[in-house]
Length: 329
Image (cartoon, rainbow, N blue to C red; front, side):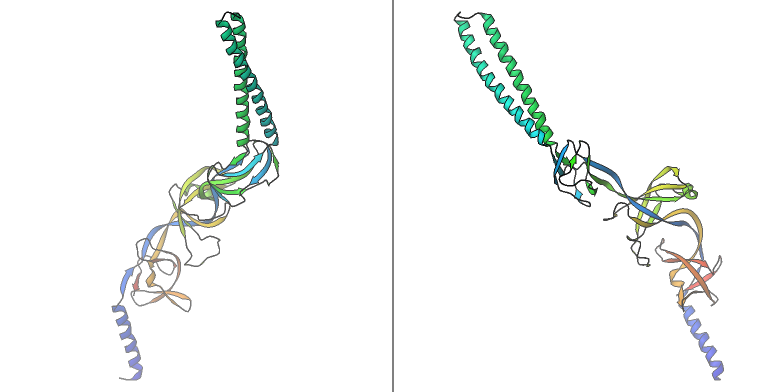
């Protein structure tokens, strides 16, 4: 056999050996969701202000932007110096009334003894009893006034109304504030992503749709980037400036900042996809090829990769069509 005939025969033998160890798989046509890439903004479910209940001067401030708090934590203290002066005046009045009450009790006891001996008339004892009752009621009223002042002093403690993270603290130590003024704004109730999509997609967004959430920082664009998943939990019924709003619940947003943006892919329609097993793709000199059943190498343009059935597959954007059969090693 000449050298010119031996080379083609050898190539044919190698091709037959390779094909014998491969499988022929028909090109798959299926329906897949058409993903729309948008930006999602991190929002908190609740933003509640921690307000001062009395006016005065901020003497203690124990939180700053980014601090984590629990419901009921004391985040600041407001002191009104007038309350201490009023409390001192009430205490002095209580002591005076108590002294008068003690003296009235002595007089009443003495009058009862003299009444039993027939020395004083009954009207005199009734007058002493009335005086004793009046002083008793005055003491009760003064003690109630004192309790009000003590309660007002205790309301100087500004409490966190809900667990969460502090967003803003618009005051500093030494600030003079009025009753009802906000000491801090607290984001609580967990985080979610709010999406804004063009109006044309409004009819395709449904509750329960699965979405893909990109890595934090929008900087990692590699195929190995960590992706998260979430579900559409709310679609707002109002179109705002040509956009429809939707909220996405994500299992764990970590320590994302409120207002931070991240990439999100949300299904907006269904489309027909031509796909082949990922192992059927061979890349040579930067070009992707697949081998047909007749041994022809066809250049293709690949798209999205997915793994719904447990076998990695690749979308073919161009180069293959219905009826083609590819060789999978």
